[in-house]
Amino acid sequence: MPDVPPPLEVNREPLDGTCPRCGAADLRAYPVVAEQGWVQVVKCQHCLHSVSREPWHRLGPIRLLADLV
Image (cartoon, rainbow, N blue to C red):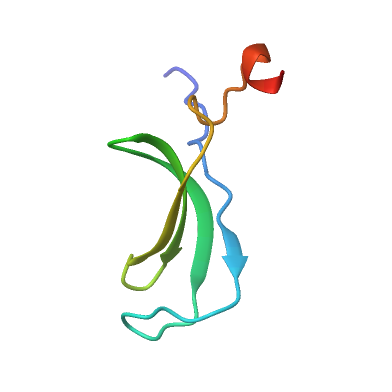
């Protein structure tokens, strides 16, 4: 049987605060791919309500040299 690589995991950074929808105190910030491309979101981990969505790098975790100049 071939070796299976471990699944990729996104680092979900814990944030202080509570969800405006359900009141849970479990907010996390992490990147996701959405309709408009990569965005950095803050989501409640209890009800998955998006507290905020900000545009991120156009290719997500891949940084092009042109993006750095």
